[in-house]
Length: 347
Image (tube, rainbow, N blue to C red; front, side, top):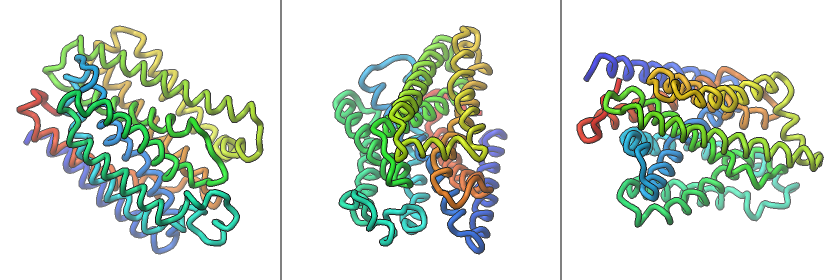
């Protein structure tokens, strides 16, 4: 194990212990704030394995140098799915604290309790994780599973985004929301894999250039979906729809929205238009780090304003560290274990 790997594992352990301690202590005096922060942090980390499986299946279907350069890190990201499933258990055990439809007095006012009810919610969650786990094993094994696998991933991830994130505000709905969340998953997983590939000596300029071009496409997809949802909701000007954005454009969250627009949209797009950035290891790595940081902020922005009782607290960063430390350790272990086969040196 290299010195860099030891330092990375050590940082992961500190993140797990530190973040877990903050969340554990917080349960004693503000349980609901901890759970909301936990859900916001978890919304960021679930995107890595889900997006990675989608990208692996897409490469099985289409091929290309970008997939050859990122296959090892994408497979390593896919193996973090058990951590995401384990970290979702606190959410499942605390549904009434997080979702209005899980509280009888609130559910009585809703017209869609045939769908939003605890038994059906738990069954859908189990089905999603089971399907993703199976496809994570099958991904990378050829075209025969790729097309149907992508369809299953698209459908399950869409319903999962409705269930786990959008139903925080059960009176609000958007048909674009699922695609928007999935585009964030894809962008996050691709950025993480490209970051790992940019550090690999075996990955030359041509694959890095391909990865940069693919990142541009992913950024444009996310930006298009984000803008279209905003435009449709704003033009309709219906109180039941526009309040979702009003909550996220006041109380300081408007600055978070601006930061996400710049750091996950405009700035990396402009940077990647410069061929020198795409060819450069440091340039591509810097763009990937910016994208990952922006998506973390977007995950908090999507989740936390939906709870009227609280805004941003220290529990969201603490939960992000706790979940991420364990995910990062598993990712590094899998990447190190697959190093001889992948031809990629980490760190």
